[in-house]
Image 1: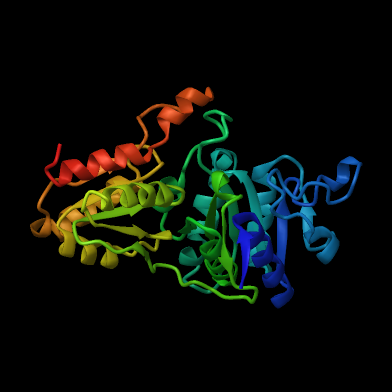
Image 2 (image 1 turned 30 degrees about the horizontal axis):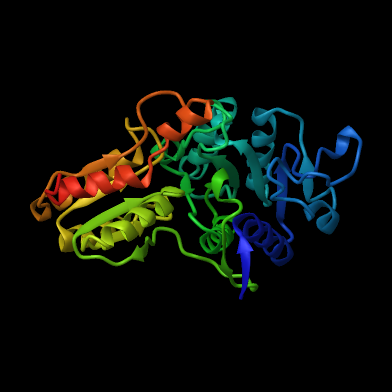
Amino acid sequence: MSKKTYRQAINEGLVQEMHRDPSVILIGEDVAGGAGAGGDVDAWGGPMAVTKGLLSEFGPKRVLDTPISEAAYMGLAIGAAASGLRPVADLMFNDFIGVCFDQIVNQAAKYRYMYGGQDRIPLTVRTMIGAGLGISSQHSQCLYPVFSYFAGLKVVIPSGPYDAKGLLASAIRDDDPVIFCEHKMLYEMVEEVPDEPYAIPFGEAKFVREGEDVTIVALSRMVHIAMEAAESLAKEGIGCEVIDPRTTTPLDTESIIESVEETGRLVIVDEAGPRCGMASEIAAVVAEEAFSALNAPIIKVTPPYTPIPAAPNLEKLYIPDAGQVITAVHKVMGRE
């Protein structure tokens, strides 16, 4: 087992799945370094260099640069999936979903259902989420709640390198369309990751930390914010159980409810907005199915209901931090 960054783990996962299955292809803008634009071939490998090296290893028939038209290449990917290939389509920023919304949510998501299971769409859409780089509202959102709304899509939000590689393998092997959300602030995160291929099943939450006083459910980068808060709270004698759902569709509600029934308190930390987000959904599920176990109201820790600012000082205020999580835990513990 070697230490790898989030970026390296995803790259290795792609390489291994492309070797394992010749029907896996990669499609997107600059995934091959903008090979049609002159200059060095395979120079970039996407804006975060995640696919760097794949063109030289698999060639231009399996690693395809596309024009800047999400509608066109997402349609191409869906057609390829329906025809027997397993495309991995790179939607550079999840904010660009609006450009190919119909292709993903009205075609890919519904295709298998509308044809009575007679065909399938084994498509993986890799996309970047999250704020932190100061690149403003149109490149910094967390839109996994939007994808999670549509029946027929599976939605994956890995919080670290180990999960990223294992969940990506499951995504590529799945016969349904999967939205694979990579947080741009995690690409440099380092963790021990097996060198050999492995797959992590969807719908199985990870218990990141054990605790008996408060359940904290956190998603993507917020898992690390929650862990920072939990470590600080432990010094006060407050034990926080931190749960990472890993996938929002399917969502492991059973594990969350089981934890809340033990702790009696729930704090949800989500970088997506406060309205109609995963924090609201998880809170609703627990309120419906485990209300009698609650010893305090559920608290959501989310950004404000506003577009994401580009100014670094304002963006820092926008993103939930450990201090806010600590305040929320104090409140549910009655220690305000």
